[in-house]
Length: 102
Image 1: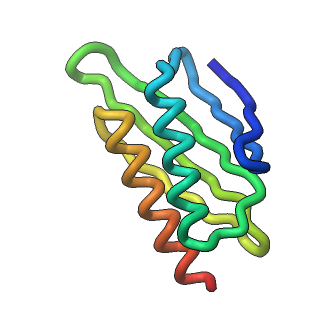
Image 2: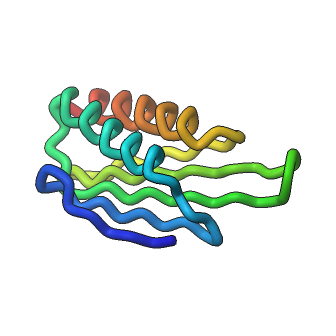
């Protein structure tokens, strides 16, 4: 499932390989962008890459987030088994990178 959305003037590009993301994940994506905006980031675009490898209890989920800001973009990636926790983790990592680049 791939989709593109414009949220608060920010282009969101979500790419997921062989996955269908439920609406709660999409709401969490918007909440993550709101959190990034709170920390003063002048965001142009956010790209999210969802990938799941394996099946059942051995499945490993990988989430990457690229935040397009003036200057060098920031990127973080995390592996785990819960999409919401992964999204919160990569958002926090990107916030730290944005603050470091100010």
